[in-house]
Image (cartoon, rainbow, N blue to C red; front, top):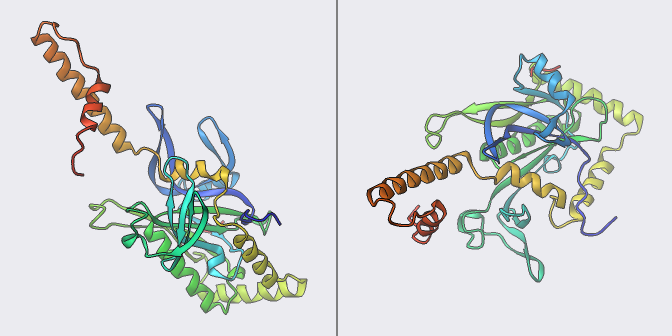
Length: 318
């Protein structure tokens, strides 16, 4: 095994809430009230939809609100890895990853293991460190060891997914990987959202089954796998070794995805900048007319530069 390379579950596609759209030559995040499944192939207009995406949309009337899934592992922490993470917003490179007790931090001298004070008290992160989670789920029966990845920095998704996985592991008697489950979209409003719905991910039993039926199905699947020689414990040990083989999970080629999904220039930033430039241009023309065009006209760039020098305070189952 190549040392320093984090070995993660094979990926066949991605799951996201929302999408990235192109406006005024910039790729910007756009909130959505549905899941989107994409392949690992990118075209001119972004990531190409996975065939599962079309099938789920047809079954749910156009919007994907739930996805039938299974999990790879019985250990919740292998299925969903969540850490406090500080990214370089320009490169997508992970600079520091911690769990509130200990962190691994990248510096010019290499990787250092330090105490992690959590984001609220970390002077190194300075407010930019935040929870970041990756969930791997199996969709369909084509390849039981290949998964889709759902990445999130949403507090509601992270807290809910951790709780659900721990509860389901407990009630199933550590048969989490054998349970037929569903990745479901939830919505809520908070005071911070000003009444606007916030959508997040949850894992539940499938809508067509009760919890008791799900537990019976999990027990049956576990017996069949054991009879066939499927070694779940060895699979999970291999996964732990793979994750521990590298200091940071995201690879070089995944950095672009992280930047695009979590750190692009927001729509509000673009709109505000355009409005400022428009207002500046109008004011300049009025001034030039009053002076009879006797003074050289300032450019928007120079005005913006001057302003910058004086900063102000702040599915149902298929």
